Amino acid sequence: MAGPRIAHATLKGPSVVKEIAIGIVLGIAAGSVWKMHHWNEQRKVRAFYDLLDKGEISVVAAEQ
Image (cartoon, rainbow, N blue to C red; front, side):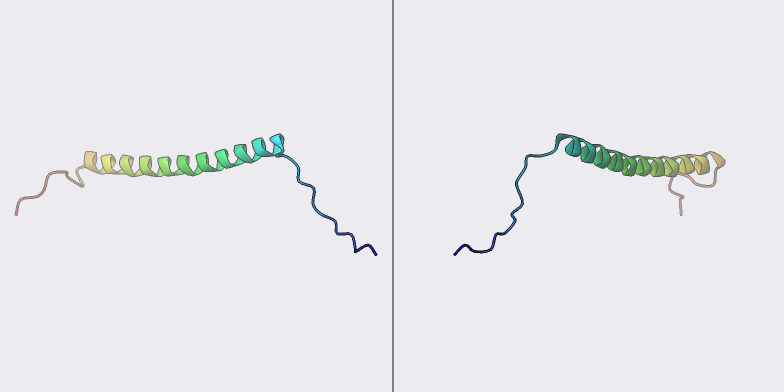
């Protein structure tokens, strides 16, 4: 008496095209996050130097 047949997934090797596509998507996502961080830091530095040029702030501690 034969038991019920169970369909098992056949193991296949990695899909090269799929791996490349996933790598590209992850690379673009990580690059975008890094670039937004860089732009934010650049904006902060630019704002600091603008305030310094206007004389609103100083890098020298005020004497008391």
